[in-house]
Image (cartoon, rainbow, N blue to C red; front, side, top):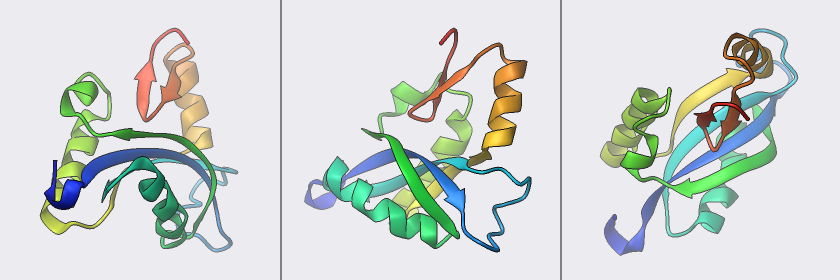
Length: 128
């Protein structure tokens, strides 16, 4: 818990690259991202996402999930180290940080390689 009742939140999104976006590296129609930020509540955290994505030339299509960060919940995740690094950066700087940007094409490839793995709130769950 942080000062003034603020907590760390992880917000998983689906977005599309804006024209001339540097993120549009493989021609995918959309990208998934996990953003870690400090906020009073989930509603406030979600309100800041469109602006943060636009700073990266991305347009928000959908908030997939918004959950408070609890380290133990992520320790089994394939992105644990990326999330942990982003959390540490947010704690040090107070500014939001993205732990993941992955294209839909890369995600589709990963799903095929991992036998139907589904992305849920930035975590992988087998057999879904």
